Length: 235
Image (tube, rainbow, N blue to C red; front, side, top):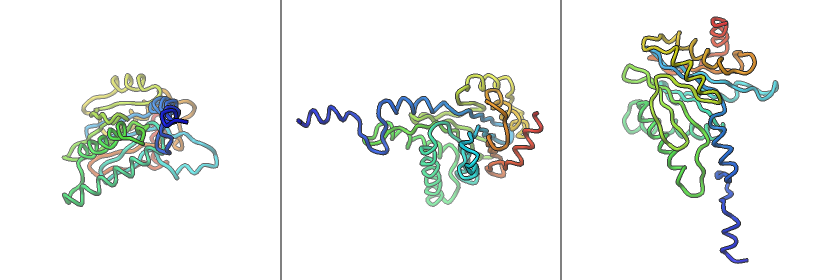
């Protein structure tokens, strides 16, 4: 068998980090699979996401979709969970590297730019595939909230409020009707949960959604008990 024929038959590099053509199409579809709602209020940012339960035997607290990156920056994703966890670790490392050099927390915009550069690099490097996730990164610095979205291509942009997922169009339409510049953080939490509810299949509980908030006190993920109280308030 000639070398030319071998190369022809092996059109795709079959490493663990590279997808075949068919898998790439599946990955691109899954980027928009899970519903998310994010909204900036006048005094903070809210990230809300559906968390699918794999089994009644599954420990829901073992893996989270809303993750803190620094004390004042958090992140959520839509797409492939393993890819997301790689980017979470990379983002935390980038934040620590910045702190070691400048002795101050990394600004949200700087972190977004660096994470997006990593994602873009994986679209053109040999032997690797693009990350199969879209990210929403929320932060607080310079006495104001920030919200950015980064796509698998490495493109990133800022939002006041947005939604992504299988029914993201309906979510964005809902947010356009409810959003205003003077929205308080508590109202933004209610609005984010209501946006999720627009396309939620089944009953929404504290076990199948996650909510993260970011304000001048920092970023944190709400406890199931807190989420339960907010769900009761909008029922």
